[in-house]
Length: 132
Image 1 (cartoon, rainbow, N blue to C red):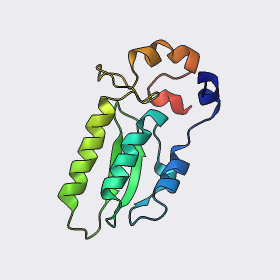
Image 2 (image 1 turned 60 degrees about the horizontal axis):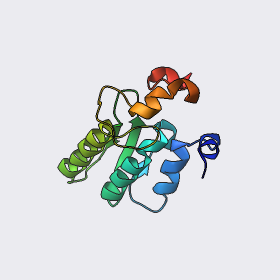
Image 3 (image 1 turned 45 degrees about the horizontal axis):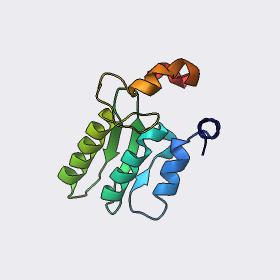
């Protein structure tokens, strides 16, 4: 798939979350899912770990320099395990480019050096301004 084809097909985190959790115990408020395609494998890994527990994922956002996941666990006894998986996803997203999914070493930006250099061309800033 060429780079132009990838950029033409827009990633939708809400639809991705719905498809991912279709036959699982975990529920995701898909309308509150907002993350870039580079972090999709991190979210998929998180869901694969907590998918067998009755958990409501209330919010998944990228407003900060990492993937922020908020959950409501109800009466599950696996709170420690679920919070551990949230922290793993957070730290993994800090080391992963939100746009392309490549490993990055600068944790002060959501993008790797290449995506950061191409941010004007891609029309992204890596900040909350990208929503507008």
